[in-house]
Image (cartoon, rainbow, N blue to C red; front, top):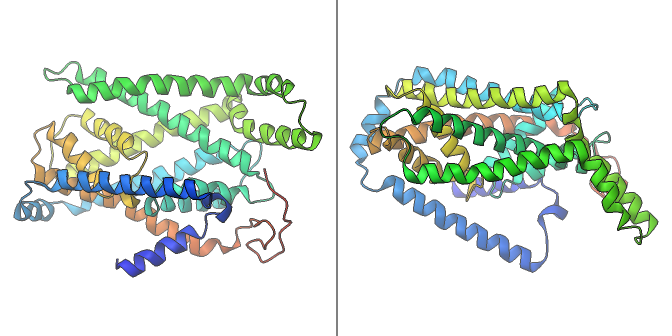
Length: 370
């Protein structure tokens, strides 16, 4: 992709993100620029670490030896996993029934924006798109994304625990840096899970207590806050429903199993005979490392993390780098393609722009949405 076409792609994708959520004071803009520069520095460092002492002929040989037929089930695994993530997200809107086609389209567009734009802009775009519909508030949409991320963090801690227990029986075990990083993730995961349960079972009670200290606010402000709290806590409260909770945690487990299976399929593509837990270990490291992407498509970070993990199993640097590049293509290119197609087809998504027109060209109400 050329530099000019890449810039047009970014502008086209960014057009879905509401201006009022991306514009801010000069200080905030400066902060974003510093974060972008820091991300660029991290990406360049990871890229250098991944490419240093690499033999280009050996890298080309590793790529030429790939059994490309194994990429077909790997791509299918990514597609199925994305569909299940959309089902999990849709379940969090209970008792509202979001049309499956719409939930799928908005979710895939959000995934695509996460890949091609920095700072996980796809989550903002997803909240804006689904929250612009008349039956869904943006506060409710935001809470569903928070619950979704909390579930993934819990699964990350669980996956690390499985890897740690699995590798404990081996002579080498986990390296110190990885063991320390995993242990440090357990406490945040436990806090997030506890917070998730607290908001699910006691969130509304806590809001009523907090509201007692806000009685001095104007009645209109309190009414707005009540409505926002009610919508915001709704996604947490649905976890009290046994069927919804089973879907959320069940789908989360399936998503992680499919992602680990994708890694394993590519082991076969590269003729790598690795222990069963290697695919899960790689998934844990990748999910931890790319959760806050420094630049679009995780430039440099993704292949470096693959070389770091695979080196623990004696895989040479060239094969590890080739594996990371192919895995990144399998994980990202289908989502970019699907997201682009959904973006082109979903011009009928109805969401109002305050004071302007909605997606169908109808005048907006100009009233803020919760």
